[in-house]
Length: 296
Image (cartoon, rainbow, N blue to C red):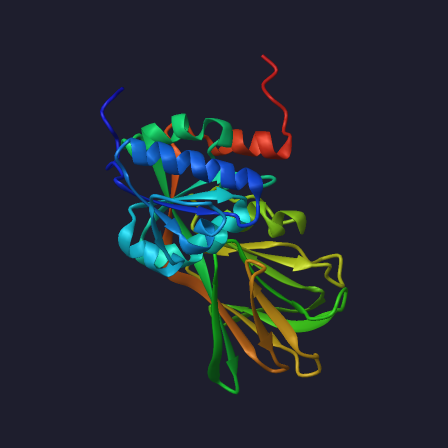
């Protein structure tokens, strides 16, 4: 094997989708193999509950960042997002084993996970710095709630198929007022998630940019906009709205009252996402989206 291109990993945390038999089997394989290879292995507490027994350390998710160099997340992209939102605070690198559906963030094949993981642990890997979004709701000028997202922040009604009205500002410059079902503010990571289903563009991971994608706008001229990643986005809910919702990665939900401001900008911490050395973003897109292969 060639000289490692990155620092090797020694302390490995395992995190997995709960109540999922296939995930449980992969976790057992990883635990036994990594311990046999001499790695310091720890398992997230809720993940450990689905294992009959474990010889690894058991720690709550919020403490894994203090003990691990690399977190291996077994599950789908949702599991990756949930773990990464917390682990990024401790600057822990994260890699995923795909036990979900599309799996844009989970590279490793569960049937070959040990073979694929060994070179990564030895220092043969690519690493990306993915930025997160921070969303803050201001009520009467005072901060009311804060959330963060790796994929997207979405302003929407708390009712199904209900039109809302709001204003959009970028760096305090008025952009437009809109009547629609809501607005998706997406990172490059999230451009292949909810934003994609809403008609937004795919942004390659290295871009320092955000997209604003309207949800079912009440005008044919409304289109997605791509803005600089260091922009400050401000949304102002119209005074005649009902109570709205602000969702971060579809998980953290915050109430937005009529007249409230929502401020969205980059979070200071970044996610260190690890890939195998032969990882290709365009190959992932071809495989996941069914794009055509080369003709010759």
